[in-house]
Structures are given as structure tokens and as C-alpha cells.
Picture 1: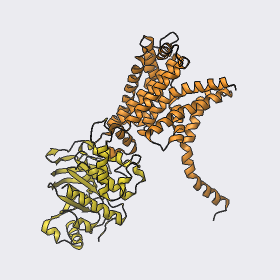
Picture 2 (picture 1 turned 45 degrees about the vertical axis):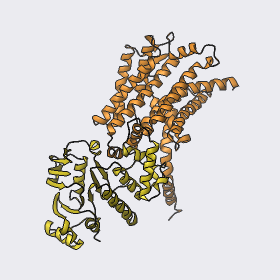
Picture 3 (picture 1 turned 90 degrees about the vertical axis):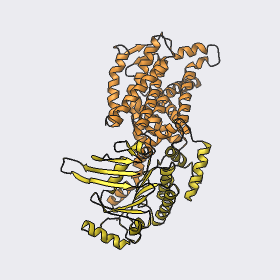
Picture 4 (picture 1 turned 60 degrees about the vertical axis):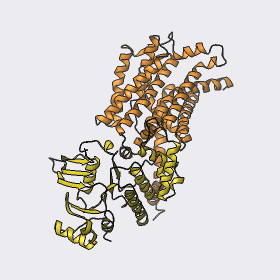
Length: 309
Length: 261
């Protein structure tokens, strides 16, 4: 591999990794902090892409970002409503919303499953114009994405130390204690899921605009990919402070993309992405559990072979 | 301060497992009173606390706290005026968060977007120092690293940092080793006295049931079968108490954790 290919590979990995790292940060909030495995992530990611895409096509490229985030927030609110007020199990609530979003996404795109944004002004083309002639002009995509990721990471780091942020963390840690502190866990869960889903939608919106098309399947498997990245990130920064863990989440997304991009270079077919992410999630969650079981398994094995009485 | 009128509660009504745990229960507690509660397993002590704190809603009757009817008020809203400690020291604090973060949440100062201020930290440090457990130097450490006794002492501090109108203690020292239990109990009496709190304490220790507080209630099958205070209570011994229980309920007091001395 030449230096140029390596550079190209790293740049693609960086762009895609950073865009998906937004979803990883969203899961950092819902999965690591709130301890809710939000299975509506796939649909919400697509929702961000479709809403953002439609708004950009209508000519409002900047408005597409807040519009996508607002749509994500509504989706998160519905997921939260189902699990906190309607007695629906949190996994099932995510699946129900995810399924419903499939129809909504096609409706948003206007009864089609594919939108083309080749000739449309997006936040990326706007950035390209703005950076014309400066030393960053070649990296306009990266600039947009870095700004978004830094903004979200800083927001989360600050937010999770406010009283509301503490209450959200405590809800995942010990809901009894939250109630004893006169805080309604229904409220904290709802706020947490609204914020997380708005970030997920932002992530989808940026991916769609960077690849200049929206497909109704753009978000499929996103929750597993993001979870894999999150768990890789926890290997680096698992025990650190909140800002460090947020950095770890972004780093995890990048490492995941880098490994995947390299694997593609070695002729791994592109459709393997989802299998790879499934395997990573399995190893990351099952690994510590199996490690804990190992001494007992060893003793059982020893007893069976007769070396221990 | 606390007025419980005619509450009843049946679990699993209309099924074969239907169980009436309380029937037309009455209790009046004056402001500043410290009541100790004893009783056999299944006497309804914890059900009483659950009803007061809002974990269960009684089928009938009403609960009035400081002039306000709280019978149907949700649990977290009641928590503003009711502090509660459980037997399990793990239940009252968030293990993944630091000591100061736990205190900040329960203190509930400032708006949603406020952060822990320097003044808060100083205040927390002073209060932790009073516990005499060295926690004031571990404010940044996750609560999960503390021992059971330290966690229970912290929970006590959290529950009383904004003095509640009513403090409920549900065998809060039962899971601790004797020396730690004694320390937490001493802290409890100190805080209750200093803040002049109204307090209900369930205990399995007959000795402390008589030694602590100013009124003792004995419960059996969802009813109060003995209620002593003042002069009468001062003359009571553990033997008297057991005898009075037997006379009132027609059977000997049995509780798997009961300590007679």
C-alpha cells in the first residue's frame, strides 16, 4: 500500500467514523448512562436522514440539521412514552417505534425509498464554498463532521454534570435513589431518550448529506455498529471521567471504521460489515462474562478428567 | 404531624393468593416524636412504610402529613417531605456516581442546569466530616467503593440533608456488623435530635426499640397490638415486652432476626 492509499483510507475511516461516532455518543447517553438499550436507533438514524434530506432538497440546507434533530427528539419521546407510561418493555418499545418509523420514513420521502441529493445544496457543499481557497478546502467534509462531533461531545460532557445530567445517570444506576431524591425517573428517562435520539438523527442526517443520497435502509444495523464502537471505546477509556469516556466513544467509532476499511482493502466483501459488528458486540459483552466463568469451567473440567478429587 | 386513618390493603385481591395485610389501620404521630416499631415477620411493618412513602397505594383510607393529604401523591413527590432508609445499604445511593454527586442529587439545590458549586462542596465536606468515617476525603470516589456501613451512613446524610418532615427507617442497621450498626444508630439519634425530626423506626432489636425514641409500637397481623410511651414505657423490660406481646396476640413473638438483648 502506498502512502497515498493509507492516507485515503484513514481519511475515509475518519469521516465515516466521526459521522457514526455521533450515534455512538447517543448510545453513550442511552446505553451507558441511562442503561436503556434503545432499539429504535436504526429507524431514528434513517428518520434523521430522510427529514434532513427532504428539508435540504427544499432548499434549506442549514435548517436540515435542526429539523432532523427535532424529528429524532419526537421519536425518542415516543419510545420513552411507551416504556415509561404504557408499561411496554423497553426493548419492545424500541422495536415497535423502529418498525413504525420504516413507514414514516418512506412517507417523509414521498412514497419512495430513495432520494438523490446530487445537485442539492447540503451543509457539506455550503462548507466547501465557505472554505474555498483556504488550506482546509480539501477537507471540507472533515471540518463539518469534526465541528458536529466536538459540539456534541462537549455538550454531553457539560450536560452530564448538571443536576439534570446527574439525575439521568442516577436513573440508570439506581432508580430507587432517584425517586428518593424527589426526581421522577419517568422524566429523566424521557429527557435522556429525547436527547440521545436527536443526536442519532443528526448522525443520520450528516451521513445522508455526505453521501448525497438517502436510502430507507441507510440506518439498518446502526445500533449494533454503534454498540460495537461504544464497547471498543470502553476498552480504551472505560474507567475514566465522563469527558474521557465520551472521547473513548468517538475513538471507538474511528477504530471500528479503520479496521473495517482495512479489511475491505484485503478483499473482505462490503456486506460483511454487519456480521463483523455483531461479532464484536458479542465478544465485547460475552467476553467479561465468560472470563468470570472460566475458573469454574476449569474446575469442572479438572474434576471430569479426574485430576481433582 | 402524621395521621393515618382507616387504611386497608389487600394484595392480589380476588385471587387465591389474596392476602389482607392491613385492615382499618390507624396511627397518629405527633411532631418531633421518635417512634420505634417492632413486630413479627409479616406483621405489616414494611407495608405501613410502603403506604406512607407511596410505594403502594392503600385500597381505602387516607394518610395526612403535616396537614396535607398525601394518600394518592406519587412516590417521588412525597420524597420531598419524607426521607427513607432501607435495610439494604445498597438501595439508597447510586454506586456508579461519586459521593458528592450522590449528595448533590439528594440535596436538590439549584435548577436542572445547575452544577455542584464550591459552596456545595464545602457544605458536603463539613457534613461528611461529622460522620467521622473519613468520607470527606473521598468525595470524588464512586459510592460503589464504600463499605455497607459507610454507604448507609451516607444514605442517612442524603435523606436528612434537607431535613424531611418525616424520616422512615426500615431496619436500616440490620445488614451491618454490630460495631458499624451501633455507629450508624448513634448517628441516627444524633441527627434526629439535632434536626428535631419526626421519625418512625422499624427495628428487630428489642433493646434499642425500648432504649431509643419516645414511643414504641408493636404490630401483629396488620394491627397495632401495643402502643406505649412516657412513664409506662420507661418501666418496660424486654421480658415484659415479650409477655405483653404474647398476651395481646395469643402467641409468642417470632421473628427470624429478632434480637432479644
